[in-house]
Amino acid sequence: MSQKRPLPRELISAQAVKDRISALARQIEIDYQDSEELVCIGILKGAVFFMVDLLQQIHLPLAVDFFQTSSYRGGQEAGEIRIRKDIEILIRDKDVLLIEDIIDTGYTLRTILDLFRFRGARSVKLCTLLDKKAKREVEVDVDYVGFEIDDLFVVGYGLDIEEQFRNLDYIGVCDPPTDQDK
Ligand code: IMP
Ligand code: MG
Image 1 (cartoon, rainbow, N blue to C red):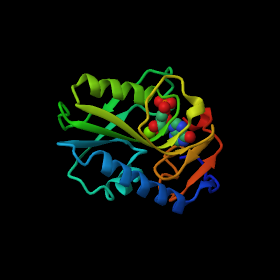
Image 2: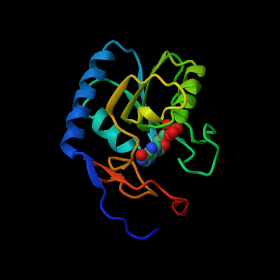
Image 3: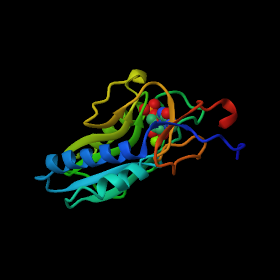
Image 4: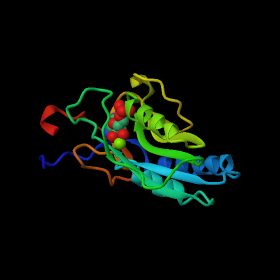
């Protein structure tokens, strides 16, 4: 573990995050009210805090599963995504809602979206808490966005720097990770 980092400065308050999640939940509930089978898939680990708060406010029958890719700074080339944990639920002919903490370059989500479509999902939509649109390198259609943010390194509400700060109830800003953080 690295030495203790100072508490990140607030970018989005806990209340603003909660309010936005409630609004997203209401929208998703409307959009999926006629869905026969909805499967919500969270991208580990960052999406977990957001996913719990969001899904508790969606009053529809739905299944929950998780997917995990290789970590953000694994020393790999951009665009090279490795599956660390696959989903267990079969998604053929089902409506899939992918839940992510943040979209940056877009490589992770582009790969996952293509994979789930290839597996025959009836529909695949994407919901992200944060979107760093300016950093996008590959095109990804995002259906639900909590907040668009500038090119900052953010933590909290599931997002981490070297596994720290996931449990903050607000979104804060940190200095980006250095090579020593790997
Ligand atoms: P992408 O493939 O570049 O879109 O990367 C998305 C992943 O990078 C996210 O799921 C996060 O795990 C990580 N990431 C990107 N930006 C940040 C950030 O500002 N803070 C923490 N993690 C980030
Ligand atoms: Mg992530």
